[in-house]
Length: 175
Image 1: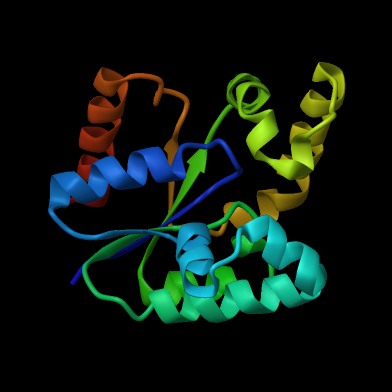
Image 2: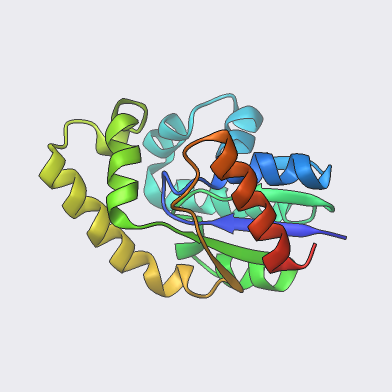
């Protein structure tokens, strides 16, 4: 039975790598944010707005426990999911955890392009965005570092890099 939780900051490539890795292993892929959106017929932004951060994090925890019971699956968590409640402990006890560690400059390049799709980043100038990323990574580091494996997610820019990363991750996890 395989159950892998991919963690990391937004833009780290959890979904990109997770989908490709799941295809390679021929098992399902679940993006926790997408799962919540499908389940509640609302975007993550809407759920966050309606419930506030505390309510959203409770819901996220509940959905994490739900998908954490699935077998033979790769799960991409939201960037903040590991940082609340006992979520990291739960994931470590129920599967393999992988932190996609990405250089802040690489995250900046990726998120700068995707700013409009991420409400928390909208309206930030480049210097503000860089500072925001660095500060968030510092706050989240104690949680992300609890993952059983740390994997560099810097090279997920094209099909070749993604395939190479999938092979490296498979080797790292002995799968």
